[in-house]
Amino acid sequence: MNLAKVRNIGISAHIDSGKTTLSERILFYAGRIHKIEDVRGGGDGATMDHMELEKERGITITSAATSLKWKNYAINLIDTPGHVDFTVEVERSLRVLDGAILVLCSVGGVQSQSMTVDRQMKRYNVPRLAFINKMDRTGADPFKVVKQVRDKLGADAVLFQLPIGKEENFQGVVDLVAMKAYYNDGDKGETIRVEEIPAELKEQAEEYRHEMLEAISMYDDSLMEKILGEEEITADEIHKIVREAVINQSFTPVFMGSAFKNKSVQPLLDGITRYLPSPTEVTNYGNDPAEEGKKIRLEPDPNKPLVSMGFKITDDEYGQLTYTRIYQGAIEKGNSYFNQRTGRKERFSRLVRMHSDKREEIDRAEAGDIIAVMGIDCASGDTYCSEPNYISLENIFVADPVIKMS
Ligand code: GDP
Image (cartoon, rainbow, N blue to C red; front, side, top):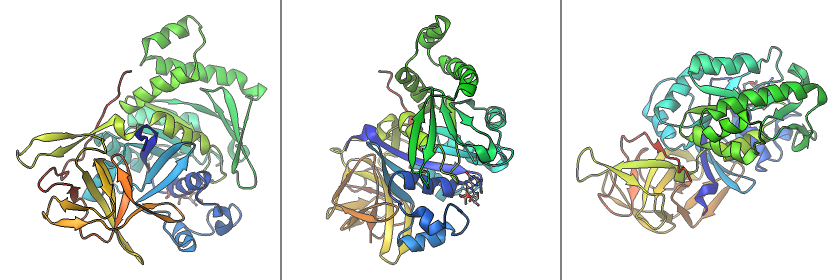
């Protein structure tokens, strides 16, 4: 597995901002749900709620972690509870994320719950992007929302896109990095069309690109010089600087779109793969059972001894599933591993990867990945290792983002 191409991410949001709809769109575009509009009834997202949709598909799309492919990346979309309190369950789910999208409503902007979930992510060192959803709504104002992200969340946030068309005429976005216009076509908005920026938006796009570049140049002196010298700046240069600043949690790029009308969800997926960290860019620690208070750095290396955590346990008609993040080493089907809390050895006889519409049986999974183990007897938060009394992840919730300045 190429870890550089893996993203473990969550979507955090104020209730009703469209987190569920957006998750579904992401799965739809990634080709996992093909009939979402059919079951939902012609684009009216309200006709069937996701619990019914779940039944219809025979498998949960709100599973604790859903795997999808986007271009040549593997994305594990982890369900992040929108609770306002710091429960252990919330902490655990944040613990397994390497990055997140903060969804905001284009009208409501930054609301109290948005501030709480953002604070939680900050506390757990989760790098994030912002996505202003519901751009099709009357009163949608992304310029106001991005200002709120700066003022209320204290983030160095800047628009990476501009809207094309307003409110119910919202058609797509101008990407200020590529300086292209992105539209969705097809009955269900399933395809994307890339065009030149409409003439009437050119001037505004130049202005906002300049603002975006100035914001980014704070993180890179040579970019500053290039701006001053009016030299050409490539998209790759921008991506690299932004990626580092996002991973260090200094900077928040802001995207926008409408999950409801299927606009601009694909550019967000590109943002996820470009700017959010891979498992190798985050350092995780475990507790040394031999010495209280001593932390051991975990290596996302499949050849090291296993360290994994069961972060969520669910029960359905197929039995018990333990969603597990592997921090170090690998899990092989049929092998036995030690529960660090109980000391008991447990055989992992069936491993599955959860997709939105099917569960895939797998033989092996490596560090950096998230899978589910069927039928093991453990409690949420338990650590499994290849050796007894090796490392425990208990009460260790904060990861350090690391960025290699190569
Ligand atoms: P959640 O509570 O954050 O998971 O929000 P939902 O996905 O359930 O969405 C809440 C409501 O907003 C639903 O009625 C959706 O149909 C609607 N909604 C979601 N995305 C959009 C959007 O982009 N535009 C508009 N107009 N409505 C949306």
